[in-house]
Amino acid sequence: MQTKLTLRLEQRLIRRAKAYARRTGKSVSELVADFFGRLETPAEGSTPEVVAQSPAVQSLVGATTLTTIQYLAAKAVGAKQAERHLRTLLSLFEVAPVTRAVLTDALELGYPDYEDAVLHEAARHAGAAAIVTRDPKGFPKARLKVYAPDELLRFIQATPQS
Image 1 (cartoon, one colour):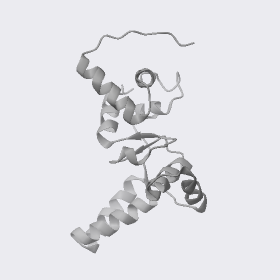
Image 2 (tube, helix red, strand yellow):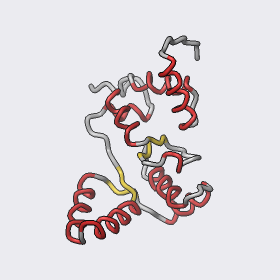
Image 3 (cartoon, helix red, strand yellow):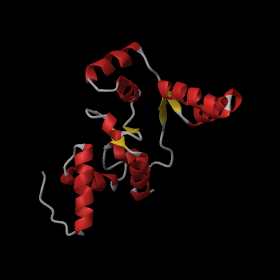
Image 4 (cartoon, helix red, strand yellow):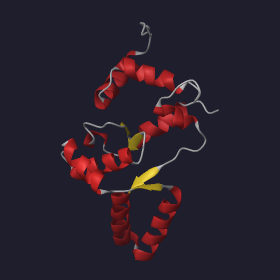
C-alpha cells in the first residue's frame, strides 16, 4: 500500500530532483522510493540497487566497447600500451557478449544509435541491473537503469555499506 509523504527541501534541491527525474523518465516520488529502497538490507528487499551494498559489485563491459577502446588507445598510445590497458580492463570486468539474439533485440528497440541499442541489449542479456554511460540520453527506451558516471558514484557513496 502506498501512502503520501511530505518533505521539506531547499528549492534548489527540488529543482535538481525534478530535472533529474525528467532526464531519467521517473517521477520524484519514484526517485525517493528508490533511495529508501537502497537503505534496505539484501534480505529485506529485492531491488537491483541492493546489489550496491555488497562489497563486490560485479561489473560488465560490452564486447564492442572493448574493440573501440583498443582501436582508440592504439592510435593514442601505441599498440603495445593499448594491449596492456586492454588486459587490465579484461582483468577487472566480465564481458557482455554480443550474440545474434543481442543484435536482433537491439534492432527492435528503435534507438537512434544502433551501437547504444547493442550495448543495452548485451547488458540486459548478461543480466546487468544498470548501464553506466557518458550519454544517458542515448538510451531513451532503456529497460535497465541508466547512470552517468557521476550519478553512479553519488549513488554508491550514498548507499550504506554493511
